[in-house]
Image (cartoon, rainbow, N blue to C red; front, side, top):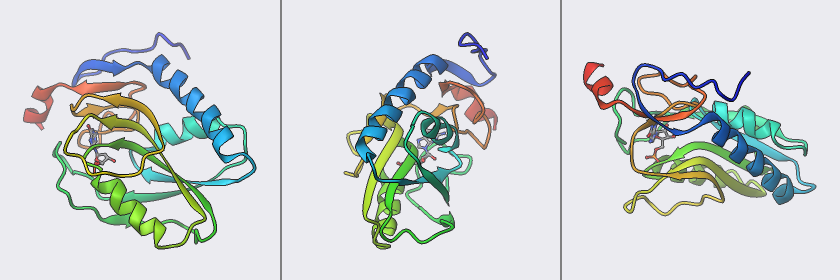
Length: 187
Ligand code: 5GP
């Protein structure tokens, strides 16, 4: 695999974060998280589907033992703006009381999804919750929500790639890109 591999897919207006930039930052985050957890064995809680690419790279950037599980929440469907409605579609496979959770999110936009998720997880009495988000949008009206580690702060634009979709597509792009607005009209 080559760092140069960044063909521009249809629907991509501009590449915001290259594959190389992503991998470099995720490597750094992995080292920070190794230090953060120390002797504790975190249970990674991945939020499907968007966090899959990030989570699999992040856990491989770490050297301490980790365990993983997944949840799925409702997405925006084919729209590009938040409905504010959050629904659990798939729950965790195991109880989490007494566990040190590492919540792995793809992107914090309005913050509503994460806030809801954290309230729900807190009610199950984990020993601790740490939150890492690959991306955080620069949004003054976002709700105040716990995010302990952030990959990149980005402008308030609809992004795709590296796990993030538009109408379930583009998740496989190895970079983060801005969606071409004409794609939205076409769908
Ligand atoms: P929030 O609840 O913070 O507004 O949004 C969180 C969820 O909305 C994310 O986990 C992601 O699934 C989706 N989302 C928010 N912004 C974007 C974006 O720019 N692109 C994509 N593909 N999904 C987004």
